[in-house]
Length: 479
Image 1 (cartoon, helix red, strand yellow):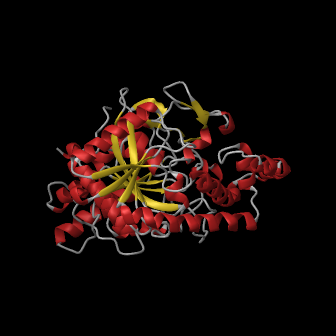
Image 2 (image 1 turned 120 degrees about the vertical axis):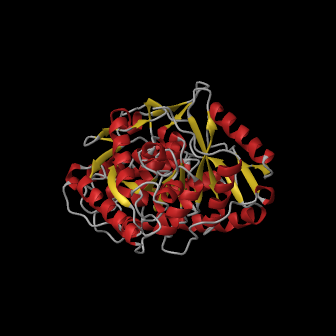
Image 3 (image 1 turned 30 degrees about the vertical axis):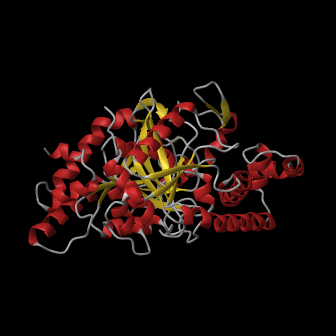
């Protein structure tokens, strides 16, 4: 009976705890047993603090028995992405040099703990959250629960895999290059990239441990198996008030812009077919769905985004790699003037070595495009768009500059073009809720992102909740 509760979302598990159908201790033990049963296959949870978690669960059971005040997550077992500091557990971000340091809870983690969550494990991430695959030399490779030969996505890949495997019901992840949305799409779960600045980043690594910098583009956000759970967790970790519960949007009153085409952005035919079917399902459920061309000039946006991103990530780059990029700047600059694209090697070299004036110019472009998007959101409640160019692909640990995305029609694209579809919401600091859209003929999940206006987090979450209730929600993989 207790193990069956793990199939439920967090809200339903919390209801079972509140009604005393299950104790926090028994629910935690069930989660640990599920972890033990699935770990060899998916390798999602890579560190644990069982003694403290068991003590915490027992304490919450005692408080509940005495009728004492307890928080909205009281007794819920939970894991945390290993880029976020958690007291008493390693906080490696995939690096040996960070693994043995002492850490206090990241601000978002402290909020979840204060709300009563029983935090027991850390989920795997690529080194410094820097990949769309999840592996490192400390903990190995995390495997997709739908097909262990394929990636979970990254960088919140262990988190998404643990959710899909029902090892955990809630996760806290992060996103600067799709790291919440890509794993959600690849593993068939939900995530929410908040409006930039809504959730404090302190305690997230990178940047360096202890930094109080609120990194441009980066966000901390919730991951779950239902849209209502995203809202619940966001209400706990956000710095501004977000309602913990809200009714789903009325799809009959919802205007959605469907964006599937841009000259710079590839979309695998199998993924396109899934999303087009999903769009028809939305229309059948009453939504007003209108196909649009790109909401802004994506060539302009992506050049700006790559520059802004490089300006952030260069802090984490090895000095030798940066020196090499500095040497090719003159050639790279000429290549860009001749029309090299935003995903080209010259664009990346210029981005990682950008000067302040170049960053400021990219920031000015970003702000202009944010202004242009206001007209789009005057007409539509949200944009429905792909998250990734293709479904989860086979593990590929070759040097990143040698990797290629391979499409079902025989085409290929640079690995870094994974930045394409996620770039609009990230560069423009917009909220984006990832929801499952369906599965390919091979059975691989495909997700979409619901992109909303600045500070429109409640709007995209309500639309996601309506989709979850009326169209489609989480489907569990067979393990």
